[in-house]
Amino acid sequence: MSEPVIKCQSVYKIFGANAERMLKEANGNVDAKTFQENGCIVGVNNASFEVSKGEMLVVMGLSGSGKSTLLRCISRLTDATGGKIFIEGQDLLNLNNKELIDLRRNKMGMVFQSFALLPHKTVLENIAFPLQIKGIKTEDSINKAMDMVKLVGLDGRENYFPRELSGGQQQRVGIARSLAVEPDIWFLDEPFSALDPLIRKEMQDEFLRLQEKLQKTIMFITHDFDEALKLADRIAIMKDGIIEQLDTPANIVLNPATEYVRKFTEEVPREKVLLIKDVMDETTSDVGDLKVSKDEIIENVAEKILTQEKTVAVTDSKNNIVGSINPAKIINTVFGGRKNNH
Image 1 (cartoon, rainbow, N blue to C red):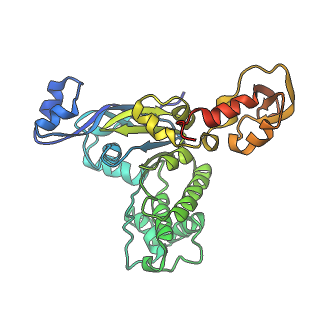
Image 2: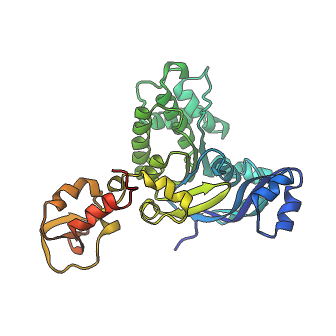
Image 3: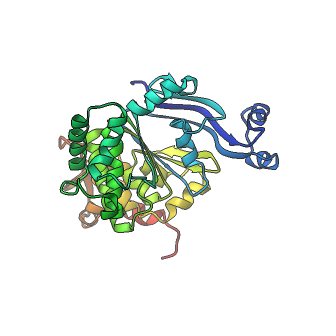
């Protein structure tokens, strides 16, 4: 197993004048209420996790849950009050200013909700801007920027000014600008939440397409559970600065760890999220003629399975039978996990 790209060990971020003293005295048991009574606000409470190369970790939570604060600690836009953060094995909290600027310029890309494009520069100039700051020759930076324009599907609009673009197009420019520096690690803080639902969905699809191609290591922040389910390899759900559960989307939906997480999963149409392999049985005896792929989304094959009398064979990418699924299991998965309000 290769070394994780991002590694957090017991990270705390506490705001307030006596934050460090209180954290020391708390000895790892930080109670938000006690801290609040002493004039401190707990932003991140004992966060430990790793993100592997090429993985997309979506950090999800409602407003005030600490998700953006956590991201700011990992990009060191704010300094953690306690704990350790490693980026590709480097101890982030021990870097001096010059090393930190180097790391940000060469390794990290960031996209925020307000993408702050420069209004007097064209799309192309906006995207080339961070490259020019790095000291790359104008011609090279413009060529690179043009590649990025194509990558995010804005060719033909490279000479527009931001005010001539829709919100979704502006967001694409923000994404292209942050990709131009070829970051290994990509931080996105609610990048699509200001967009209307249709454009948002397009941007999510676009984003998945880009990620399939680029295989970046990503931390993506959202307050939208559907967005998290759609994009994530794994999801971390935060509440009051604490990571309540960190798991694959399927496991979070099937096995919520806390009451808080369960509330999120209640309304989720499971058949849209879960794959056949998430609910199949290991046994392969006595199966009928129908075969379905283990990587198929349940919704896409449910109807076929439900017309069968017999158990259905489940195959892998080489068409080998790796398990089976019973029609009753589909019914149970789709309807079993919901509140009885039908």
